[in-house]
Image (cartoon, rainbow, N blue to C red; front, side, top):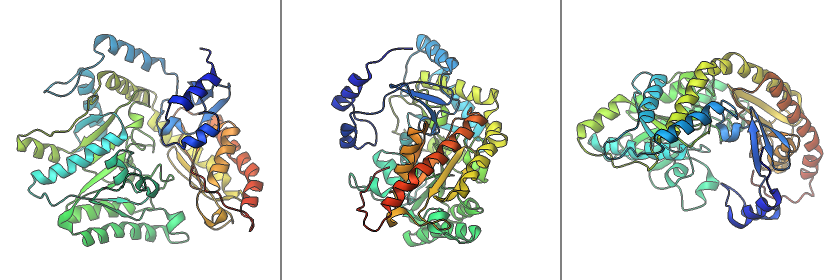
Length: 469
């Protein structure tokens, strides 16, 4: 274990490093970022020596847990043999071809072709360009419009952030770009509280059809959605929602894109979320769990019909990245998938640790601050409310309570994320039953600890300070 000069590193962090999606003034006021120095299994350690149970699997990605020497060795071996070569100029590398073959087998059906990228954002940029190019090749260049959902997250690039429905992201950089329409999300706790679940799901799906008709079916290229919205707050669609969405896409002949950046590779107890919810997409974007975060790599799965259209054009698809199919990243991803299969981790999520997680999370339903708990596989959420039995928020505005509870969780030794007033979790597949129980105990203690702070915040004379979670 290496020794680090943590105070010096935190000063350097302020002086030179710009972390992702951060308030740089706040980081400066705090004296620098929290420096994470090592990790093992489901636990990370910071520079001060605090052990923190990682309830977020890094950033929704470290599925096989930390410290896998096997993955380090395969990276080393591939670096010695072929550290890099590109996929331009009619070339390919062995790991990229083998990984594409493996992913195609997991996707199944007509999804037999794979384009590699380095991040989920890039994967959705590939979706964006591919879909529009496809319709042009089909002789329908007017089909340019994507339909997405408010509060969806599809990445941080210009195209990805535009496809996503995050208002605070659209406020920076003049987004969204033209040709993207946003409809309601299937967020029953927030937008259909007390409504019959199936009726709400029908209503949410029907808004997609209404928007198609409003825009003009001959102008709509695709609908894109996450099986479960992750960064939106672990929003699990009601029964029947996805079947209705697929039926609408087929009715109007538009492409259906499943964003599996978070849900792919076993997170929901199936290899992919579309398999869990029983629909068939034309394109699948994926990343995070592909390599369990050990190296940057993502992929875009494409249907045979779309690829045959590309081939029939006898022209270049002028799109790609320097690191598309990077041989070291591909070799690590391939071994990561082998580990998931060998250790039967998808089955474990479906039949063991996932159900245990669901039961443990449900035990928080009796807490006065909890409006709802929900989970799907190893994704979970806790809604914080000001009045039990309602969906009312502290100060009457979303985003005041979540950061308070989140910070209490982290101080108590659990890394979680606050999305507005929702505490979300996404633990590694290898997390133990005891660690799950400890997660829930820490959340309950954090809720207890936060109650007085939130009560004061909710008082009539409280002056609200907006906090970004």
